[in-house]
Each structure stands twice: as C-alpha cells, then as structure tokens.
Length: 171
Picture 1 (cartoon, one colour):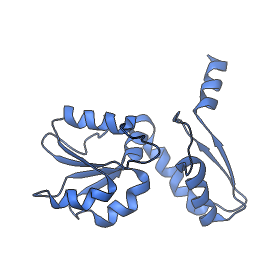
Picture 2 (cartoon, rainbow, N blue to C red):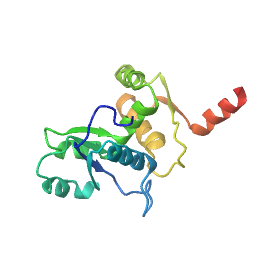
Picture 3 (cartoon, rainbow, N blue to C red):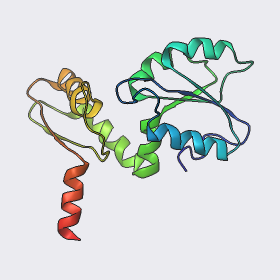
Picture 4 (cartoon, helix red, strand yellow):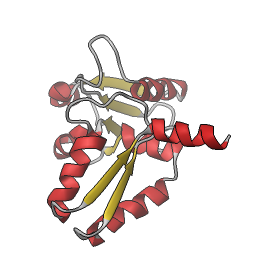
C-alpha cells in the first residue's frame, strides 16, 4: 500500500498539492490521484489544498491532521508551518517505499555526506515524465549536490527510457 500503516480509518490526512508546471491546469498528477484513492478506500478523512492555502486549511480544522503529504519541493515550507502533532511525508517518499527498496535509498542518501569532488554520482529516474524547467532530478538535485560537495562532482543522469531499452534487450 502507498501509505502503509501511517494511517487507518477515520484518520485525517491533509494533501498539499502544488499546482505548477508538472500538474497542468485541470489535472492532478498520478501519484496524487493514486494516494487520494487509497486514502478514500481506507476510509480516511481527506482534505486537499495548495501550498498557498495550507495555513488557511489548517485553521479550518478542529484538530491537526494525523498525516500531511506534500510535494518534495514544498517539504521545508510545510514542515516549518505544520502542527507538532502531525506527521509529514512526501508523495515522492511514499512512492519510493511503495515501488522500491526504501531502506536501500536511505542508505544511499546517508552516503552523500562522505562524497568528495572526485566521486561519481548516478541519478537514475524511473519515472517517464518529460523533464521540464527546474526538474528535480535533472536540475535541482545536481545543483544541491554540487553546492554541498563541490562543482567538480561528476553526475550522470539516466531516465526510464534507458531502463526500458536495457529490459527489452535482455528480454
């Protein structure tokens, strides 16, 4: 399950869903839709808002949500404003655990502090979206890594198309 044991029936969950270039007007992105559907199936109480309406949404509630799920790019903003009793995660984190080996990903993130400018980093995206300006995997993460480690850090980026090609060649 996407939300695992983070919530159960009747828990209040607040979804913070930015409406940006990744989510064209009139549409939600698939992880948001799938998460919302699962929460409804679990009989959770759900509320959806945008980043700019987050504080207003919280003010409308009688008690804090058990869980807040947001976009990774808004994580810091939401974290700073969330109620102390509310747990916080992102759609990306939920789907990393749902579709992958989250313990392995966490281990990989822990290694970042040991990187030097002489190391090489591979960013392997499994999603199939067309990259846009300020794409998190192709632009924001490499920029953050180079800022932390150094400008000479080598970063290679591969996308789902590479994985599909490899799979087709061995299938």
